[in-house]
Structure formats: structure tokens, C-alpha cells
Image 1 (tube, rainbow, N blue to C red):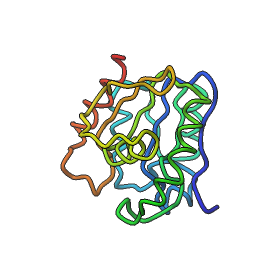
Image 2 (image 1 turned 135 degrees about the vertical axis):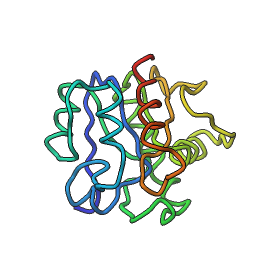
Image 3 (image 1 turned 90 degrees about the vertical axis):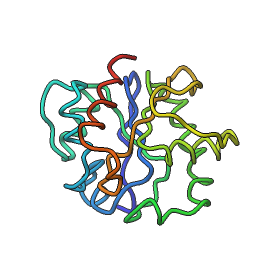
Image 4 (image 1 turned 180 degrees about the horizontal axis):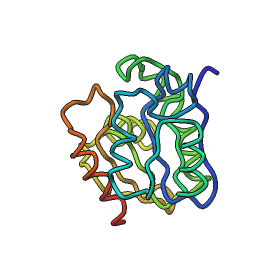
Amino acid sequence: MKSLLDYLATDLKLISIGCNPSPLSVKYQCYFANPRNRFWKALNGSGLIDEELTPTAASMQVLLKKYKIGFTDVVKRCTPGVSDLKAADYREDSYLLLEKLLKYQADICWFHGKVAYKNFLKYTSGEDDDIDWGLQPIKIGKSYIFVTPNPSPANAAYSLDNLIEWYSRLREI
């Protein structure tokens, strides 16, 4: 596999949107598969789900089928880090993501990180404004947009407790 498969379906509550897949995520076909990534710990601590899950393909199916949480990326090209992406990657893949989000119409489109959301906006709407964390002022179709800090180990500015707090806020919408 050259990329990470989408986990998408109709009637989703959330679509989790990362910037792009890591080599480990592609290898295991599991989002946020790097053991140092804090996504799974934050998800387990947030109250969004009522069981503890680990980064496995089986857990991805549980999230999709039981909890109605889907997964995709702004850019589907696998790289070791976000800094390896080029403007052309965002330009080419942002419209594909927009088509997916309009097709599946989840309650909330959940972007992990301002870089992911900002680049998506830049190449789909031309917007290039500063972005705040949390609920955004625009929608994608009927879907609300929510932005949380990226759980990547490279984003050490935000602690696990910060991530849990932001993930917990998704329940309020």
C-alpha cells in the first residue's frame, strides 16, 4: 500500500482529518499508529468513546461501526513528517477531501492541527486567515468544523491533558 485507506461511511458523527499518513500508519493501516503519537491516549481519556482502544486496524473498525467516527487525511501521500509535504500535495488533494466531506456529511469534520485545516481552506476556498482552535465559523455542507491540536509527538507544545480537554469539547457540539 502506498497510502492509508480511508475509513468512511454514511451517518458518521465525526470525520477525523489528519494532515497526511505516516509510514507506520500506512504499514499497519491504522491512523495515528506511531506509538509516540498521543491520539489514542487522548481519545481514550476524552469520553468520546466508552472503552479503551489501541492503534490497530480492528480498533479502526470499532470506531467506524460502533462510534460512527471515520478517518481520512488532507493529503494522502505518506511522508515521515508534515514538513515533507509540498504545496502541490495540498493543492492536489484538498479538493478530493472536500468531495469526500460533502459526500459523507458527518456531523463534525474534526481537523487535527491548524496546518491541516489552513492548507485545506487555502486550496478549496482561497481563505488564508488566522485560525482559532475549536469550532469554526463556517461549515462544509451540513458539517460543523472543529480544529484541535495535532497529537503528533512533533507537536510537544500541547500536552496530553490539553489534547484530552480539546477532544472532550467535541462531545459538547
